[in-house]
Length: 66
Image (cartoon, rainbow, N blue to C red; front, side, top):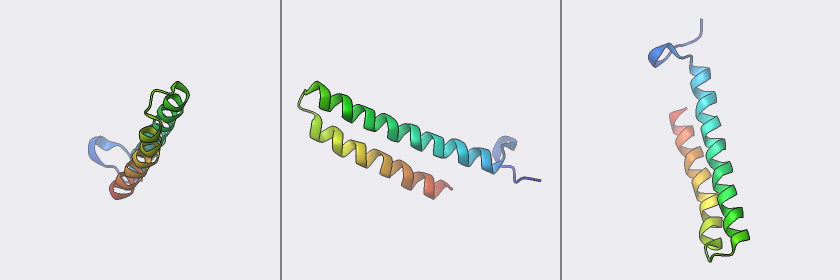
């Protein structure tokens, strides 16, 4: 019998949803960086740094919560 957490949701399901959120956030940050770079509005460097920092922070948070 799988280990159930809060509200009876299996641990595996929670982990899959957690990491899916991390991947979605990473994809969104990268897409924002690409859009800023193509638009040429002067936010290129900030968005490129954000595209690295946001997924890294999300991954570390997910590792801690795992």
